Image (cartoon, one colour):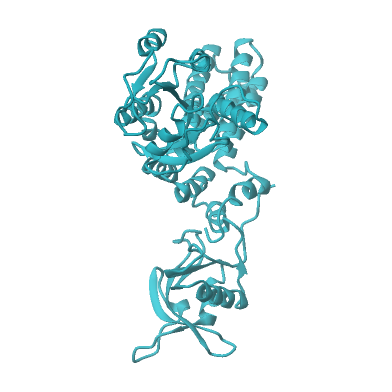
Length: 470
């Protein structure tokens, strides 16, 4: 069942909690102006001040928040008026800018509630912007991504989605499906008038083209997740090869404990850093070896699981001594497409066994360095940068899926298209083809939130992830 448009007035603190120079309380809904007018005393300058009800949209008014029960002033404020539909929610909206102390904002919010507004739910302002047609669901999700962007690249991706890049790509595919569905349904509705079903070759070509466009979007999901949440980069190796030292060197801070004793790192340590404005989720792991210690064994198991899930693996070897059986075991197990081999401790001596490893792994990048002095670390960063460019280069310049919900909807639409292709290839009647096309159209409509292809449960799931006030 499609949710009804809201008819009440909501309010919330729209700025982060804590002490700041300015804080904002946002009020939105049909009674927003009368709620604020009840508690706002405009500053008079030699004559009667216009009421908010008489003021034009997008004007700012100076005055005081006052308690109507006592006449006591609460804060000196600026009140910004935005009339429907020229506001974020497309409703009557008032933003009260006061001093940013928690007590001040709490008192202003309390006055708004006492004047007839109710406290907004998480994400309710953006939810109203969607229900009132200002945003589609992909743009609403982009608002959340924009707030949480931790890199310039993530910011650019969220901004492109907020401007409608993903929605435009999905709408174009959906329009093609609607056109093909219209041709199929015309042959069903006007069979007595001699309207023939579209030729099978025409249907096949259309479906092939639509599937290719869908596939591009589906394939973008993994890159989008990496650019949003960070490229999972795991440092592995046997104990005491310098994994934690490299972890600290790349982060440029002493995050991991470094000792000469094997087994110091027993759990996963994670930190974020930026390389070429791409977020990297760097993970330091327990040294991989056979150990009788149950706690260390659990750390080793976690290290192995993280390696299996990693986008990029940094395999660290001790270049100051001959390689051991555990080193060769790790070298035999690596995926050459996502691993950089590192010979550490070149400040001690030239890397031993370098030639043997290079001969066995000719397609894998190998970097000699010293995590202790930093020598060679710039080359390692350059190799990581090249790896990122090869796999993510240009991603930010095209529409990119940014949530698992969007990916699931596209995958379901792809499945429906596959069924339609099978129906067309097997000469099934137009009714079967129309059923599959309708399924794909419905999935894409749900992704965008159009034509009622969404539910209250879906909206709650999306907007509950927002903070109150957005």
